[in-house]
Length: 170
Image: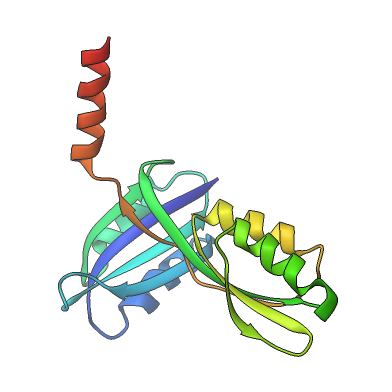
């Protein structure tokens, strides 16, 4: 089972290495990893998609690491998740308009047009990127680069508002 985990850390050398080696020592595979600054310039957020059965013990171990401030395991559907992907596809000049129209369905942006290829940028939920990739396979994928997943927990106020509206409507 895949788990989405965010770890807020102090910006210190070696923090990412300690986190990833902890997962490696326990034989967990990290499918996706993204690190970037937070609203506080002294902190970074590490977002990981990890394969494994239960994360409770891992979360406890993460808290024991130096410079780790907060660990969150996001339940399925309770986080806003995004990725970015660059994908280069074969684009015979006769089929370019067809390919561009197909990419438009996914709000993909053509960022480079070569003699025989088009490179698209797609940003969105991981499943949407997967669907775009599957669709583009029919044209022939030349190369692919994909970022790690980033995520933030959904705003609790939004969920409470929805619950109140549902209760009023009932």
